[in-house]
Length: 144
Length: 129
Picture (cartoon, helix red, strand yellow):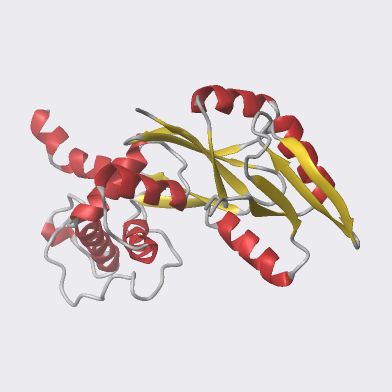
């Protein structure tokens, strides 16, 4: 399925701390619609997309979280145990399990990581859709 | 001091004995009746004085809570050494055991984690020279 702004939505059911803060003004127009064409009714949708974009970049703005994505991109479906073992044994990450879970919450809020429950176990997946959207926005357009 | 006996909690002792001997490849060592349970141990086949694993019934709320929590978080309760993780992975999969982590090289070791069907995750590890 092609990822567009319409099907790229932030995951629901986030904890209050993971939810983006409400902003009074929006500075960027992400829809490609001319500024003058904004109507009052669709403005909140643009605002939501901007806040979601902020979340993606904030999630990426941390070396540990980028390392987590590196490891999750290597193989689909990893348990938290496997991810922690990879971080400790391959990268000598000196961090508690709880701290890694906090980083994962931020990555999940940004839609970069998805958790899937299978029976009694929970598996983590890397979701590249938000990153593909970023390359479409800048890189692919420049190449065309 | 020597490691003589260590234990793994199991849902059903007889079922666990079958899995640990027929699938994993250990041998039965001790089997004594103890009330409604058994003092049941398994050990490595070629080491008569090697350490034993007690297949301990999880008939205790604390044991079950511990076992379920470890399983839900994907944490293995025991780690066994093998010469060839990839070979064991195929062999155990042929026996119908499911892996939560396929063989993965991590620095000096290759690890894999599977569900022993008795309520636990078990890790196998191969050390590289």
